[in-house]
Length: 219
Image (cartoon, rainbow, N blue to C red):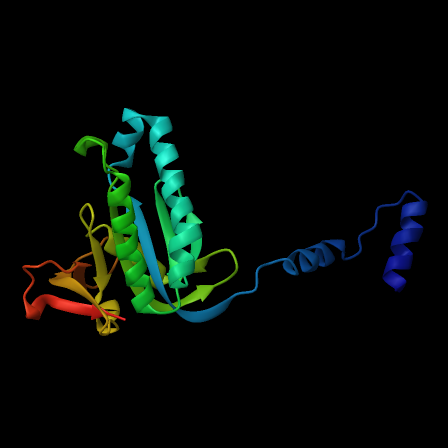
C-alpha cells in the first residue's frame, strides 16, 4: 500500500517512479498463461502429400478442398471418435485422442473421406494423406500439446506413403479386437533427429487377400 502511495505522489510531482512495476506486470501476464498438465495421449499427425504441387496446379481449388476436408474432420469425425483438433496448418493437422483405438479409427476414416472426395478427378489432382500416430505422456494445455512424443508422431508420418498410416509399436500394442485392419511390420526405422531406431507398423483397412497373421482388429 505504501509503495502505491509513493508511486502516486511521484506521478503527481512529475517524478519517475522506480517501484516494482515490471515485476507486477510480469505477474499479471503470467496469470493469463494457459494451464498445462501431463497426460497420456495418442497424437495423430496428418500431412498432405505433394501439397506444393497441388497448390501450383490450382491454388484456390486446393485451398477450398482442404478447408472442406478439415471442416468434415472437425464437425463429423472428431466428435464421432472423441478427438481434439490441436492445430491446423496449411497442409496438415495435429490431433489428440485419449485412447489408441478411436485415434486409429479416425485416421482410417480420414483416409476414406479424402478418397471419396477425390472421386471424379484425375489421379494427378488427387489430394492424398499420410498419417503418423504415437501414444505417449505429453504436456497438454488448452491451445497445444508438447513433448518428444509429439515430435515422434510427426517423424512417423514421414514413413507413410500416400494413403498410408504408420504407427509406433506402442500404438500397435494397444490395438484390441473390433474392426478388421491390415498391419505390416516395417521393422526398426531410423528417423530424423531421433537418437534411436523406432519400430514402425503400417496400418490400413483389411483387404480380402489379407492373411490371419497380418490382420488386427480395432474396438
